[in-house]
Image (cartoon, rainbow, N blue to C red; front, side, top):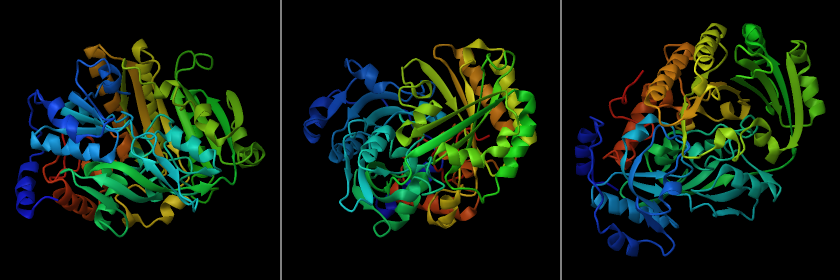
Length: 503
């Protein structure tokens, strides 16, 4: 851990929150670092044949610049990589499945620490109540492993995202009405700190850090593994009903949705939606899709959704699947379009969290979305997601018990812009478009944003809470565990309460 005198000096330096530019890595990195790593760890340089696949990202727009990538095979490889980087005053950045889209990542120049090889560590405890999950595991791999053993738990909705990283930012999931956030399932973490020290973090050891890791964890360390609650599969079936409407009925649909958001519904029921261009329904404007997603048989969902059918949609479909097929049925499987990591695509994602639908704001957001989508062919695979979660188990957890500050918000809006890289004019147009939609949809002056969906220019309070005590506590933890600001590239906590380019 950092000494108190160094921490005080670092706090002063960090208050400017400026990351210096660094020169190339030492030419002897292979001979110096290789003996310190495990036999199966790899140090990749840009000349390596493995470099293109190792450096490929889901979002090429906010691309970190790596001078070397260390593919770690064990926890000690992470620690030694961090110590080496500090020794040579080189920034480091750890990543798992490369889905972070904060534009601050584009400021990074240094050593990448890839956790992707920590993807075989998963063990179900003999008690059957928790599992140990490696820092490089994918959500789909965890789901499949547990399902074969009659277990389930909350993971990322997209099968391609990491199993650990989303929990550090709270972690919305299909089961959160029943079990809570992903962060609420975390029992223990093994964390490599900014100076390379490895610590065990739980409700007894490093208790304050345990608070911060569950909601703002990417500010404080690199997680090599976590102990995570799991549950028996009691109901394997999931049912989906999709109601498709033309946009003229947007106000009617979301006024109806607000009436259904009374907080007293079934914790197994989720309200979902997507806006996208489907010329089979409407050749001139994006359609409005409204969905019910239910952990139970279709016969039960049909009773819950009877009044939705009274809206008389323009198109309708339904499905009943086992849990492993839920994400694929919604288009979020690891090999489907939303998850594709081909090294050619730019992605721009934002999140706006609210407690209910502000219909006037939704109309402004839709109009901003439609105006550009229908006039710029390069963006026509873009879409908007309206995620509506059951929150009974989320709100049953005391609000002050973790760093996650958005337990009261039931709805998450997310414009997702997709286009091919290589056109700077389109890049700037996408950024402007995204900002227009964000400002239109957020409504309140106190905007709130799910940190895992943040773009990086939101006020820091929007991510970590407007209550003064929250930011104060996070800054104190930052000063203690990362005083030099090594973890400063993905939605960082700044000592001055603002970050680069706040909206």
